[in-house]
Image (cartoon, rainbow, N blue to C red):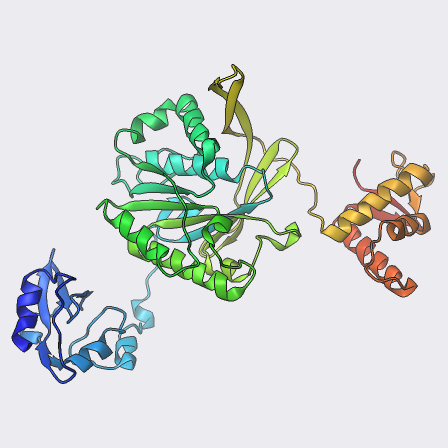
Length: 441
């Protein structure tokens, strides 16, 4: 079947007619130019981008066994090198060859890089989808995102399409698009005709072995560059997987990487905070280790703060504050108003400290103690505009609220000591001369 291999490659490598090679059969590397790039086609029809400088004369015979050994070499075939160690040695640099990279690969400058990955997380109903859609619309339209540059502005080549996988679907997703169309016609004039923003309400399983490949293939069928893929939300994309286990989250991350590598897009995952919001996004920490960017959303009154908590290659110091402005979009079948919302930039506000579950219990006990035993204290050591309460009364109410999971006096005392110390460190309370008071009303 040795001669059949050349015929199969010349015929375009049809996947339903692969040649059958015996283990000892000898075939020849097929090397040719594809858009000016030298490409090697192996026995399975896979194209491998080869090192510059190869020519057809460099083709050498290989057994089918040798070809299978060459395939794991990162898709790069080097003439005369048949070991993984040789391939890796080609990646070594000299210090003289290291030069600064001054040209950025940003998608949203100082927030997101092209071809990278991110997770946007926050508590339920904080406005994660509104934030992600607003950012995605600006990327697709090549318009500044509230004063921040995006790739493709100033008539530069468009970095590609935006695909928004709305896994929670429902009328809310559609209505948010309609609200944006109504309030930002300038954006829709740029993206609606060209299809640069692709709403994708569907269901997927990125814990499984097939949907990552299927999503990448579906995007590739458009034959257009891809700038951004949004997966909203992780919980709906996990299938039967458990986001709390490193193994299942690892499979999810591998599928995200597959989509990112195949499409060249930035992949953004929308996720939820854990029960203890001080510990970041919910589930296994392997997600945090894998992504390039983490953005946390927190609410303080009507203002939502989007803050970069992790950046692999840039300072994690950016903050975007916004409110959600209600938008009337029509009437339902009963004549009642139907509304959605759009993102409206706002001034950042001073955030209240994030408290753990046990700290919240202690502060509820503190409020009850103030209500029953609060008093104004006089002297330089106490504020003149705050109610104070003794530590004994505060601890008594902490015991009533079951602050400690233990029943012994020692366990209760240790729990109270730990929580009051943590609340002082966070500048929530102050303690002096056996009395405690709130730092701010």
